[in-house]
Length: 319
Image 1 (cartoon, rainbow, N blue to C red):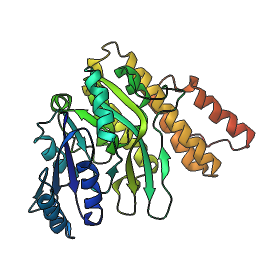
Image 2: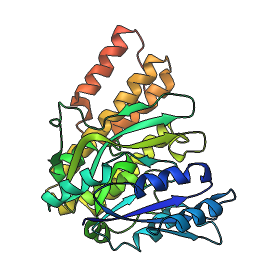
Image 3: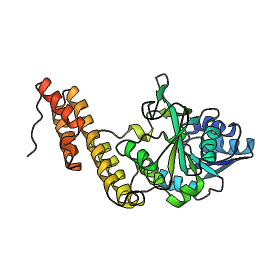
Image 4: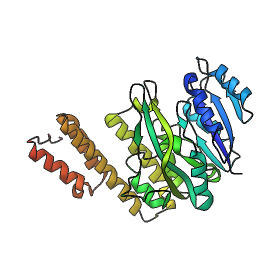
């Protein structure tokens, strides 16, 4: 049977932990081992984790005596991997039925695939679940498919398109790629997917694979604006410096990624302009122009110029 290690890092998420763990334990068609790592939580995580380990023989619970941070906790889990495949599942997220088997079957049939991801639902504290569809059917046909490494990297060079709770990784690819970087506390996942794509193609399952929870203490919603754009730029820069050469030593992939990233900055400038925030829009515009020498020839740049003319909102020129 296909074996999968599920690592569940937890810090003060006792209220969500059981749902996360049991969503992995009850997956059909795969042999699952769950490792819960409590990063010295101050809530009831030790009691919940110990109870889960007592109830389910495939669950192991361990607890830090001091808080080590999420990156060190992730990497501790990676160091324990022995199964065919691996999933890093935050304690506040959970899997949907059949998710692990769908991902594993795709990788079993395509040994060149380094990891597989799929659709997710975003679940807020006070909102109904919203569908998160990373790839549209204009990009990929309905059902499972495989994206060549270069195609995936281009698509995800400006935005993290992979919902983390859906990302099932081939263990040998993860061990070859290494762990998460401590210098990327907010965009380490984006850099990881780019890095893994340098070790193989990327599978996509056009199915609902997991629920990604958004709430007041979630790290992913506490970081926005230009700082977020700069953090993504740093993740891309590290990948270009360390991994892009594995795929394209000519530099063409790097140029394409930077061109796409500048387009993302122009998109954010356009959104700021829609809100009447001309100073913010100018900062995004200048940031985009600083990234790629071909930025002024992009469609998004031309659209931004047209919007300024139509709305009579010419952005200030930086000095």
